[in-house]
Length: 339
Ligand SMILES: Nc1ncnc2c1ncn2[C@@H]1O[C@H](COP(=O)(O)OP(=O)(O)OP(=O)(O)O)[C@@H](O)[C@H]1O
Ligand code: SF4
Ligand SMILES: [Mg+2]
Image (cartoon, protein in one colour):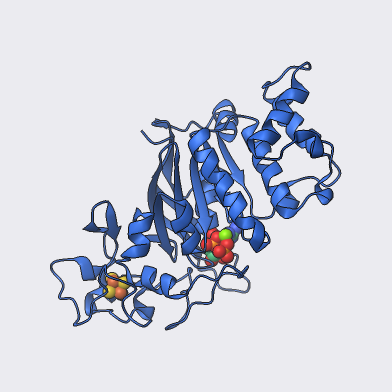
């Protein structure tokens, strides 16, 4: 049973109208996404800027309410009472992109770690110091006395991100949602933080959601990958399978934007067009205006998720037996077309 499961999550943000027009418009940021986060696994969510990755992560933390859909924790639908929300906040922890803004500059590392231990009664007065030091050891900030009385500005970006993760571990979560946790870090320390997430997955049996625009790091870290385009999941499956044999033309486009370890910004993808407006998303398959394989059906009907290999599904009509594939279809053999 997954630690956390989302069923048919949808989020539409209302657009504030300026001027006389009274038509109600919405941003279709997340559309009908279901996913499961089993314990001791990393699930990557990959996609371009604006594809809805952070909105999905915020829905999973309950920071924002879904337009529709539900969440289940250990198979039980999440309740709406204050007590249920408190417990949910303890069990599902969000790690933010910017470790500096997630720590309070006027407080020491000790304060950041002891506060949740006290608030959630995870330590008494006598063992507060020991428990705080243990947390630092768990994120490999060792020996702990070198770090415990430092302030955020005295730490490197990677050390700050480790403190932010340690603070989350203080309340013994089941699920860690990491939204681009390394994209603001220096290239030389990114791998260390990714390796820490991997260790936590194994040692603490955490279910981890890893949000990234970098499909190469998803392959490195994740067991499973979900590729998002314009608010929808277009392909999902084992991370190695998705990167070795991408079946959706958009996944192929993502892979063709060769990973560059020195890059801090999301890549501007080569190829036709740009991501669509999420206020009026394209009809049918949302990728059709950019897709070199688009057929008549693609503009008319949204493709359902179709099986392409064991545990791998792609929402693309090319993989439906009813539709004739073009002469050079995107196969599972490589990145396919020159997009
Ligand atoms: N509070 C909001 N109100 C209106 N629109 C929003 C709001 N939050 C997000 N959006 C819109 O939802 C869409 C998805 O945004 P989101 O931040 O989830 O994308 P993302 O994939 O995380 O992008 P990035 O890689 O740049 O972080 C975007 O079009 C964004 O403008
Ligand atoms: S459904 Fe059609 S437009 Fe969409 S990715 Fe597949 S071939 Fe391209
Ligand atoms: Mg984001």
